Image 1 (cartoon, rainbow, N blue to C red):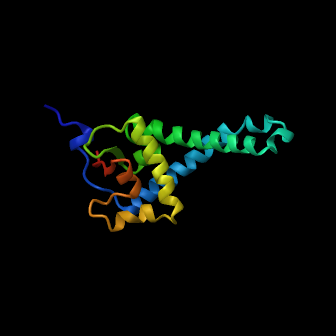
Image 2 (cartoon, rainbow, N blue to C red; image 1 turned 180 degrees about the horizontal axis):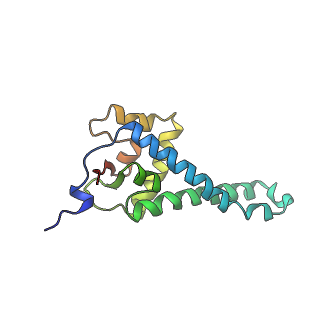
Image 3 (tube, one colour; image 1 turned 135 degrees about the vertical axis):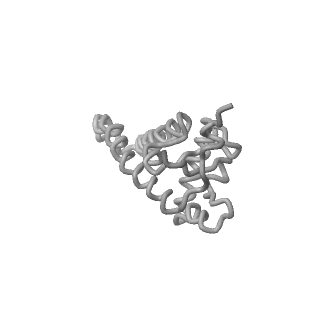
Amino acid sequence: MQPTESKLDLTGAPSLLRRLAAVFYDALLLIGVLFVASLPLPLIVQDINDVWWVRLLVQAYLLLVCLFFFAWFWVHGGQTLGMRAWRLQVTKSDGSPITWDSAVIRFFSAILSWLVFGLGFLWVLIDAERRAWHDRLSNTTLALKPKR
Protein backbone atom coordinates (compact mmCIF):
# COMPACT_ATOMS: atom_id res chain seq x y z
CA MET A 1 0.00 0.00 0.00
CA GLN A 2 1.42 3.39 -1.01
CA PRO A 3 1.60 6.07 1.70
CA THR A 4 -0.56 9.05 0.91
CA GLU A 5 1.21 12.35 0.47
CA SER A 6 -1.18 14.24 2.74
CA LYS A 7 -0.63 11.90 5.71
CA LEU A 8 2.85 10.38 5.64
CA ASP A 9 5.14 12.39 3.40
CA LEU A 10 5.02 15.62 5.40
CA THR A 11 8.08 16.17 7.55
CA GLY A 12 6.87 18.49 10.29
CA ALA A 13 5.78 21.97 11.21
CA PRO A 14 7.42 24.84 9.30
CA SER A 15 9.19 27.74 10.96
CA LEU A 16 7.68 31.19 11.31
CA LEU A 17 10.15 32.56 8.77
CA ARG A 18 9.12 29.99 6.15
CA ARG A 19 5.45 30.77 6.80
CA LEU A 20 6.04 34.51 6.41
CA ALA A 21 8.04 33.98 3.22
CA ALA A 22 5.09 32.09 1.72
CA VAL A 23 2.71 34.85 2.87
CA PHE A 24 4.90 37.48 1.19
CA TYR A 25 5.05 35.48 -2.04
CA ASP A 26 1.27 35.00 -2.02
CA ALA A 27 0.74 38.69 -1.28
CA LEU A 28 2.64 39.61 -4.44
CA LEU A 29 0.47 37.24 -6.46
CA LEU A 30 -2.69 38.50 -4.79
CA ILE A 31 -1.84 42.10 -5.74
CA GLY A 32 -1.94 41.03 -9.38
CA VAL A 33 -5.21 39.16 -8.90
CA LEU A 34 -6.79 42.16 -7.16
CA PHE A 35 -5.55 44.44 -9.92
CA VAL A 36 -7.35 42.35 -12.54
CA ALA A 37 -10.44 41.95 -10.34
CA SER A 38 -10.68 45.71 -9.83
CA LEU A 39 -10.43 46.61 -13.53
CA PRO A 40 -14.22 46.84 -13.99
CA LEU A 41 -14.70 48.97 -10.85
CA PRO A 42 -14.00 52.37 -12.50
CA LEU A 43 -16.99 51.67 -14.73
CA ILE A 44 -19.17 52.46 -11.73
CA VAL A 45 -20.36 56.02 -12.15
CA GLN A 46 -18.68 58.34 -9.64
CA ASP A 47 -22.02 59.53 -8.23
CA ILE A 48 -23.00 55.98 -7.38
CA ASN A 49 -19.57 55.22 -5.94
CA ASP A 50 -20.06 57.92 -3.29
CA VAL A 51 -22.95 56.00 -1.74
CA TRP A 52 -21.82 54.15 1.38
CA TRP A 53 -23.40 50.82 0.52
CA VAL A 54 -21.74 50.79 -2.92
CA ARG A 55 -18.33 51.26 -1.28
CA LEU A 56 -19.23 48.46 1.13
CA LEU A 57 -20.18 46.19 -1.79
CA VAL A 58 -16.88 46.95 -3.54
CA GLN A 59 -14.94 46.08 -0.38
CA ALA A 60 -16.95 42.89 0.08
CA TYR A 61 -16.30 41.96 -3.57
CA LEU A 62 -12.53 42.39 -3.15
CA LEU A 63 -12.59 40.43 0.12
CA LEU A 64 -14.43 37.59 -1.66
CA VAL A 65 -11.80 37.63 -4.41
CA CYS A 66 -9.11 37.19 -1.73
CA LEU A 67 -11.10 34.43 -0.04
CA PHE A 68 -11.60 32.59 -3.33
CA PHE A 69 -7.89 32.96 -4.21
CA PHE A 70 -6.71 31.26 -1.01
CA ALA A 71 -9.56 28.81 -0.49
CA TRP A 72 -9.44 27.46 -4.04
CA PHE A 73 -5.74 26.65 -3.76
CA TRP A 74 -6.14 25.15 -0.28
CA VAL A 75 -9.03 22.93 -1.33
CA HIS A 76 -7.39 21.90 -4.63
CA GLY A 77 -4.06 20.51 -3.49
CA GLY A 78 -3.51 22.17 -0.11
CA GLN A 79 -1.02 24.72 -1.44
CA THR A 80 -1.07 28.25 -2.78
CA LEU A 81 1.72 29.14 -5.18
CA GLY A 82 3.70 30.71 -2.35
CA MET A 83 3.22 27.62 -0.22
CA ARG A 84 4.36 25.45 -3.11
CA ALA A 85 7.52 27.54 -3.52
CA TRP A 86 8.32 27.15 0.17
CA ARG A 87 7.24 23.47 0.33
CA LEU A 88 4.30 24.03 2.69
CA GLN A 89 1.01 22.16 2.62
CA VAL A 90 -2.18 22.66 4.60
CA THR A 91 -4.35 19.73 5.62
CA LYS A 92 -6.94 19.05 8.26
CA SER A 93 -5.45 18.06 11.61
CA ASP A 94 -6.14 14.40 10.86
CA GLY A 95 -4.13 14.61 7.61
CA SER A 96 -7.10 14.62 5.25
CA PRO A 97 -7.51 17.28 2.55
CA ILE A 98 -8.97 20.62 3.60
CA THR A 99 -12.63 21.31 2.79
CA TRP A 100 -14.31 24.55 1.71
CA ASP A 101 -15.72 25.02 5.21
CA SER A 102 -12.29 24.68 6.79
CA ALA A 103 -10.76 26.96 4.16
CA VAL A 104 -13.28 29.73 4.85
CA ILE A 105 -12.72 29.45 8.61
CA ARG A 106 -8.94 29.41 8.06
CA PHE A 107 -9.11 32.52 5.85
CA PHE A 108 -11.11 34.64 8.30
CA SER A 109 -9.11 33.31 11.25
CA ALA A 110 -5.89 34.34 9.47
CA ILE A 111 -7.30 37.85 9.12
CA LEU A 112 -7.94 37.80 12.87
CA SER A 113 -4.36 36.61 13.42
CA TRP A 114 -3.07 39.65 11.51
CA LEU A 115 -5.49 42.15 13.10
CA VAL A 116 -4.03 41.63 16.56
CA PHE A 117 -0.62 42.86 15.41
CA GLY A 118 0.34 39.47 14.01
CA LEU A 119 0.12 37.72 17.37
CA GLY A 120 -1.77 34.84 15.78
CA PHE A 121 1.22 34.15 13.54
CA LEU A 122 3.79 34.72 16.30
CA TRP A 123 1.95 32.06 18.29
CA VAL A 124 3.92 29.39 16.38
CA LEU A 125 7.00 30.45 18.36
CA ILE A 126 5.48 29.28 21.65
CA ASP A 127 3.02 26.60 20.53
CA ALA A 128 4.19 23.03 21.16
CA GLU A 129 2.88 21.89 17.75
CA ARG A 130 3.97 25.13 15.99
CA ARG A 131 0.40 25.93 15.02
CA ALA A 132 -0.87 29.48 14.51
CA TRP A 133 -4.25 30.69 15.75
CA HIS A 134 -5.84 30.17 12.36
CA ASP A 135 -4.51 26.59 12.30
CA ARG A 136 -6.13 25.89 15.64
CA LEU A 137 -9.41 27.72 14.91
CA SER A 138 -9.90 25.94 11.58
CA ASN A 139 -8.66 22.56 12.82
CA THR A 140 -5.95 22.52 10.16
CA THR A 141 -2.21 22.10 10.21
CA LEU A 142 0.60 23.41 8.05
CA ALA A 143 3.39 20.96 7.29
CA LEU A 144 6.74 21.15 5.57
CA LYS A 145 7.00 18.84 2.57
CA PRO A 146 10.28 16.98 2.05
CA LYS A 147 12.69 17.95 -0.72
CA ARG A 148 12.34 15.85 -3.85
